[in-house]
Length: 190
Image: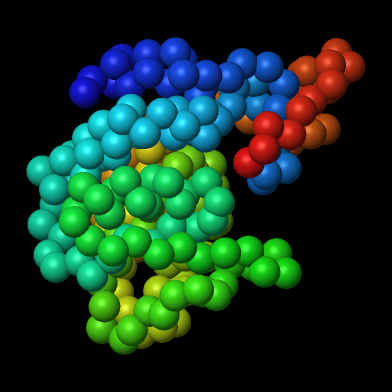
């Protein structure tokens, strides 16, 4: 799939929104990727994740993978579809007291995981997931994400792949032009 085809899918499914948004990071933006809207269509989600895996494998020999791990909640469906494309098990980390933790699954020392997420802006949840894998004595083979809102600025110590690298404008709240105009913002459910 080309970048323009991916953008078209995101727009048609309502995954690419325009307005005034306060992101989980606290920043404000005029665009938001609500990947849940594209992920509600299983065949489309499957195609996007298959394309993501295809691009990753074409660019990098990730070696043997024991599973795919995602941060809840947004990354779970992406992780599931990436795991399906890799024919590997999938697990997820969950929030507990504001931090990601392993509650339902066990990571064994020496295992290798692909970390999968829907959208990254600063990469905090992906880094927390990487830290969980490393703390368990396992390794990260690669990081995959549907949409990289940082346009490649979020960096990890592992090969990182995304279907789309875009950097919609973001502002600190006190510098947001939409706030200056008195336009109300919404929390889009990230």
